[in-house]
Image (cartoon, rainbow over all chains, first blue to last red; front, side):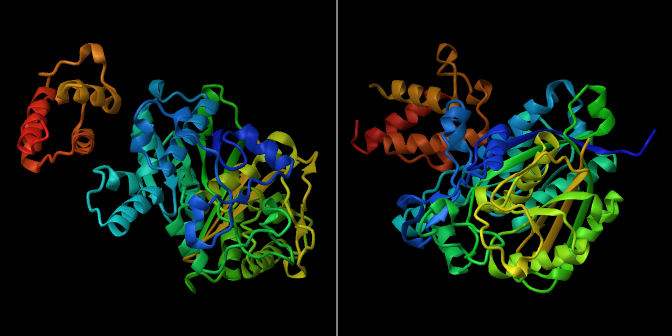
Amino acid sequence: MGARRVAVTGIGIISALGINLDEFYRSLAAARSGVQRLPEEVTLGSGVQVGALVAWDPAVHFKGPEAGSLDRVAQFALTAAGQALAASGLDPATADRNRLGVYWGTGMGGAHTLEGAYKSVYGKNDFRLRPLSVVMAMSNAAGSNVAVKWGLRGPFANFSTACSSSAMAIGEAMHAILAGRADAMIAGGSEALLVPGMLAAWQALRTLSPADAGDAAASCKPFDKRRGGLVLGEGAAALVLEEESHARARGATIHAFLTGYGNTCDAAHMSKPDRDGQVRAMTQALAESGLRPDAIGYINAHGTATIVGDAVECEAIRAVFGNSETPVSSTKSMHGHLLGGAGALELAAALMPFKEGVIPPTANLEQPDPACAVRHVARVAQRGVIPRAVMSNSFAFGGSNVVLIAERP
Amino acid sequence: MQTFDRIKELAIKELSLDPGKLDPNAPLADLGVDSLTFIEFMFKIEDEFGVKVSDEDLRNIKCLADLERHVAASLQSAGKA
């Protein structure tokens, strides 16, 4: 018997680019942006102009009063997890549910619930809050709801490391399977914090891009000389990760193998990106996968479109890959920055070439910044390429760096 | 609408109870209503009728008939019924 391997057997997506994997991939292939001018009721006085909002009607996805007891971030999680399970064909009802687990990631948890509570307390001097406020707002609610819904009684964890949360959830879930603690895991993350208070806090960081003067959808410009900061998004991505023999025994379709996970901390600064920490994370992931850098045929960069962040990441990529021709893109240009959900959504984007032979582009990249000298896939998807392996980078406030490597089946 | 009809309507909507099997004297726990759901339901009852359900009241309300009695008494003492 060979070593255990972790297969990806199902993916579910909630994003501004569509609320299933096919729509998501179609939008990425067409370089269609989901960024828009945010409505006044979302921004209020925060000054934030654009975001990647999900077109979401809870009544379509939840019956009766169910949606009312779930924060938007948990609604996204449950819907994405349901899609991933359905796509994988794994039926928890007929599996050993003690061997199925959930590792989830979210940065802010139930931000809508918290915002509503503060609005009532400070805005109306009304301290009579809904009894469900705590269990809706708590950070682990999204993942816990997934476990409860399908009775998944194996390992559970919630990761909250800002922008690397869901990448970490996936990497740790991979290790839980490799360690023999689970047959399969639902791993991913969700974020839903486009509410006025949270937007005001982000605006105060002076890191958000204003609306592009000509086209709000083109506001996020990673690696471009004209880049003006990140654009916040919302949504979720869930992956079913499964031990290879378990997946093969039930005839599941294997989309990819997850083979490398790097996890390091800059331990230097709360927000300033650090080349060394990123290099160590990429190197660690490569070492675990046993691959040389030239085996990586696509890098889905963290690429938030901040001045410093993009330049440092490209430096780190060059340090690991040399002056290679490895294609790099940042799909945040289209789906926005999902923060805690970003790593999972972007791993799904990174796997797109395996399924479609299409490498998604960095939209709006017209004037590459010399400080970001890597081989860009700019504006238009690269077609007809099925790389052997892909890498997805997630670098977070707090100095957390997570890198995932997946290989084609 | 009578008090009980309003409670019943809210229970069907918020607790997803089957209208055909809704026995006013059945313990709510037997109808599948857990403690957290029950507390959230009381919150909505307070909104609906403009009454207060204290912690002590909560302990004494075991079924929808108990709830109806409590709401009716509260409304009466507040002069609303």
